[in-house]
Image 1 (tube, helix red, strand yellow):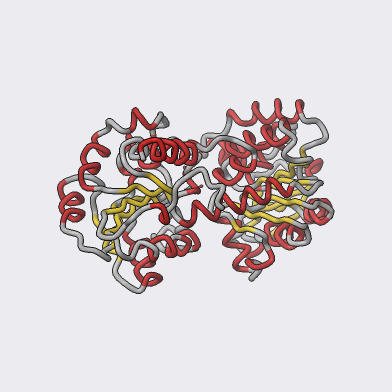
Image 2 (spheres, helix red, strand yellow; image 1 turned 90 degrees about the vertical axis):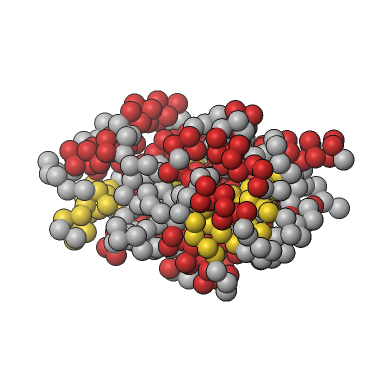
Length: 410
Ligand code: 3PG
């Protein structure tokens, strides 16, 4: 007997139907537009294979407006075609005439991928399903679609148009990625082996501080260790002069206001947040270790946690029973600065239940060949930690609401 409170592919007759699937293909890419890691692309293949009798319309995003990798979905369609063993047709449109005629002329077994849905600015407005349902995009696509599936766990913490807009007006369920994420993360939460440590790194400072606050307030974690840009912000919040170039970087990401937020979090959770004791500067590509009490007046970027921090954090992580890693500890794509991320990953696999979330850190787990040593590699970054922190993810709530409606209407 299943305890699911949402519908899945198994609950629908998809034969010959047009199924719109929101997937998360947001992928690390270099400045030439090459895909650096295709874990998310690969992750959706089982969902698409289970829809082989349907006409599958994929909707996805790549990055955010203003970022260098905010680009077309063409490379994603090519990579997906390779994995699927048949063409995933790239359609250079989202809901205009070209997209609609491409959908209308599909045959059973066809798969198309529409253009980056965030090229349409209304996509990223956070609002409830009923408001999204009346937008142009939904009105234009709705008559062509029979079933909506949300397989984009990784962006289901955002109440965005393509996550919410169809859920109140079409039969709606979860894809295979979504199902696996919910069941694996639930196992992690319910297992609850203590101590539980969250290690929060990467660049999404706002999301990370929110999670630190949540898990420490609701008792979801015993300690939070910070690395990456999150750590730089927290060091600045603790009064450490991290240097102009690092402050400029924080500003360029729009996170200067998070320094004040960081101060409040540090005060509120005294002793519960582990900051780096030392950092690794990038001096012309060379790694230079400096204790935070001795930071020079220089203009060098901090690109990793330092060796002393690696040792103390690793020790703490090894002694934890549940470890959740999110975001890399440093610039893991540059060899000298991947050390912190790699050592933290190696320490985490000693715990009873280990979860890694976020594209970049999951990529490093795979680079190290540690995939099988983790209890669960989440496709989500912010979505994963929000879920673990006990937050309600709008995309998942919408699936539950749709299931209730569906059962009531039967
Ligand atoms: C992610 O990479 O975490 C998801 O695709 C969501 O992306 P976002 O943080 O830009 O909304």
